[in-house]
Length: 145
Image (cartoon, rainbow, N blue to C red; front, side):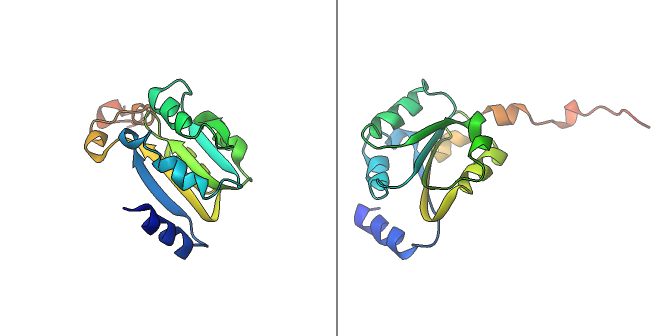
């Protein structure tokens, strides 16, 4: 999709949030920074699991000259009650539906949400901390009869 087309979509949806799903393999090509440049004078929040993660480092390098606030996913609750115009979440190694819900709700109407995550083909083998918390049929124990 061309940048001009994206700009038209953003302008048309001025009171709605727009979500962009960007694969971690496209980082470093300027796509994220070009989207964020449109909101350079607004509040930009970047959330990640670990600042030293390779994908996170690549993302932050792409945003090196853009004023932003950075948070860990574990600090998502601290953001409750606030708003932002741009949310960038590195979901490469972590996703929690509750925290993702909290973060998406931070974005004002007309803002953008950029999710950085693996390609669709890689998601089938994706195993995060969230998955480790699932209980399977084998985990269920009959306690009362």
